[in-house]
Image (cartoon, rainbow, N blue to C red; front, side):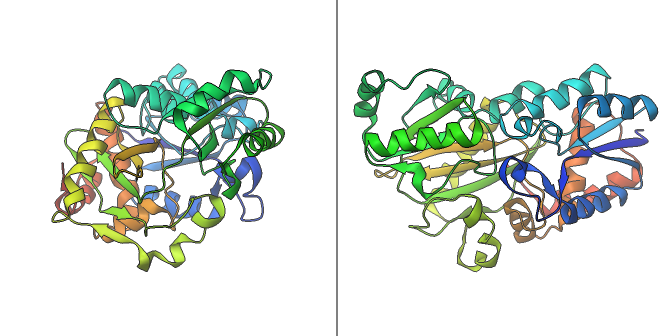
Length: 357
């Protein structure tokens, strides 16, 4: 039976949650998540992650550690790691080096989900629809002649977004461009604000957007599917931060809805395509013809009290603490650890509430 759980996160205050630190977790949410873990009656070791050395030292000082519950996206001493898609994998690689099993998906899957170009590649290999797109590396000089044929293939308007990162970093209303001048301006903006790197230039989808959360491993479970209002517009950090105030406008897609089975099918195939574990959140959007296309997979979705995941959990009749505890439980089972009898008892009503796929 695991006795010590390492809870590793990147904590910030509300004032600090900006720029590259937007991926970090608010201190109030960290406390709510920590309380949910403490309620399992395990010994919880909390670490606000700054550097790789700090993590190595902490593990050595607290050896042995039986399991890690990971929210950290990287290292606060190197803010770029919080954004560029590599920090989350490096944290997991460190834990593997110390032979500590962890929650959520594998190193490989997290890397795929934190890099949208890799996500799209994996989905396409499984014949899952994604937007038409191409990748631009801003380490290289912008050459209009080279990309014009690619633009002609897709057509304006285009959506421009960083390949790495989460929390809609780099996405604004100006991410939708209608000509070459706007495209070049957006590329230059991303390069100035986030540094050189890969950018996704894709078909701008004008249809309705949906978000789906899949939990567990064998079997998988699904939380209520959220449909955003039609003509909701681009979802970026500022709008996402206000969504909790207007969720009465969001529709829950029920089993009787014609879209339900289609969304479930795409989501389940996406979970399998990236070889996910424990929990992922999938964003799907319609194109002008009504075709459903996956636009993002989050391998470590936010557990904030005001997050979409918690909203969906509440709609299913689960509390914030219960969704944390269930993911922790699934992570242990996946790693062939035997959960305590107390945690087993906590999970029984959760399984009865959730809908298996």
